[in-house]
Amino acid sequence: MSFESFRLHSDLVRAVRDLGFVNPTPIQEQAIPPVMEGRDVLGRAMTGSGKTAAFLLPILHRLIAKPRGTTRVLILTPTRELAAQIDEHLEGFAAHTPVTGAAIFGGVGMGPQERALRSGVDVLVATPGRLLDHFRHSYAALRGLEVLVLDEADRMLDIGFLPDIRRILRHVPARRQTLLFSATLPAEIVGLAREILRDPVSIDIAPTTAKAPAAGVSQTAYPVPSELKSALLAELIKRGEIRSVIAFTRTKHRANRLADYLLRQGI
Image (cartoon, rainbow, N blue to C red):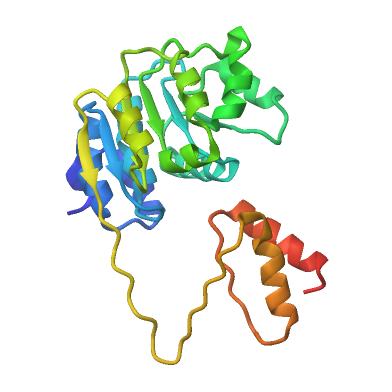
């Protein structure tokens, strides 16, 4: 199967090629058609499965076909890093289209975010807490919203965002398409899905079984809180037992932050 087989808008197919995508992943194969049809979707897929493209591409296809000039899509994510990452993907996929987007998260000024809300950008990618801050003002009304996406819903549950999500639901139209993606489906997420999804298409992409490491390669796991990861890495390097290191991070923002930290540690 190719991306052309989905009959996506030609501008999206062009962007997919520009970004080096060749064949759709399993989650993309199963999610793109029902999302294009306007169906609600409940998807279980791990991080790295390609689920961002699985919902962005069909959503963009529909936005291109029927431009409106008001915010029509809201994507909720658990962290600012993920919001920035999805916004970056959005820019790439929409590069040859008139579709506009903006990311809304904490830790930065609200001015540019307010302007994005006032201007009615097509797609908002937001963390729940900062979006609720904006909802205190009339300019943040999302009366024309057509699609709501909850990405990494289980992580939002872990962080404690479930009450915030319920508050946000009171600010968006009841008649909408809703997409919920999660790596796991704990009881609370299943309950939320039953409340907000209408006759959803259920997609379950089982995680790939981990393969054994290549001969001569050893593996060690260090279960530490997220805030201690950088310090642990610096300590392991300083011990001198590791001669060279490749560190993988979820986003470019985290990579830059880790690099700055290691430089400050004299590494």
